Image (cartoon, rainbow, N blue to C red; front, side, top):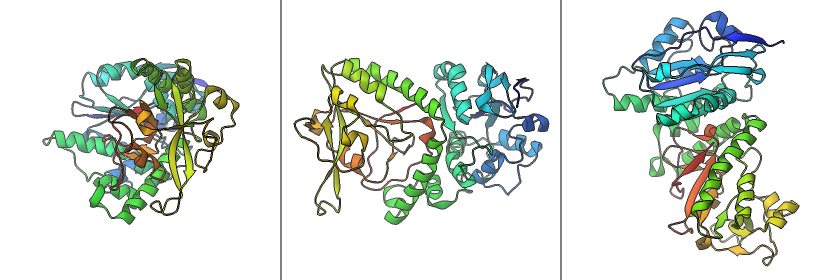
Length: 408
């Protein structure tokens, strides 16, 4: 399909009660024909809203009820772009984008959080509006696309991924008890992960079996969200995060010891930061899984940190770096063991996180155990894409929260 120049003609939906702003990229041909947002009959945005807010099926099938719902719940709706060249509804084909002026909404409504629907909307919002949002202290959260093109995500997956929208609405409502926020937040959730996230069940508030089931379901959903980020965008955002972390090296002791990780699949890639750390003389350690007796709490592996010299890393043949989850017995002289007390900065991978710093890992509990061994003054930071944030991470007694999470 040939690209054409398209101008945004649908008015934004907002008023002085709006607290949450949801931004798409540009209305699709079906939305332009319908005269409203997410107008393609197979787009699942309105079905997600129905589920999140406990509304009957097809309650939001018409534009009038959609507008009333948004205003009643304090949700503003618009798009990042005012015009662009685009082929059909393909965000990947967008060229020569011109942004909308978000100040039109932000100067009228006390927006507290901005959500973007889809990777392209997130990227363009950060490009055009990132500075404005930062100046006003408004948090930006990226969500997956509800388009039928995002076929890898089921409706239930999208409901879970969009739960932060409902949480933000509920939070705004709690802060303003006079506001009219009808509906039952989160009653449309399904599955153990949805229930645990919606109810905020933690620790003794959920049985061990229920907690594990909730984690498993949430893990599946968030990993699908992360997988949906295009590879090129993941690389660009990883590089931007590495540049931010690089500035932190100047605040560490001379020749600091830093623990990092080797990215598995679509994780945030720290390669550029590792390069910078080596250039500045840092000692860089990677996790190494070692066999341990079955009697050690029923575990067959334990995680330790081992130093890796830059020359060794460049060979691409360090077994515990190339295969992070496999047990390894490296040469202790070539790859010296690092005591937890030596580490000055620890960067932690994760599957999901929430605003309280609760972390969902891959299920082995290795980092939860290792965090307990670090010095009190060790700088600890989780590393994640914005799409990995959820409303609430269900936790068990052994889970550890993170003091800081660096997001890209």
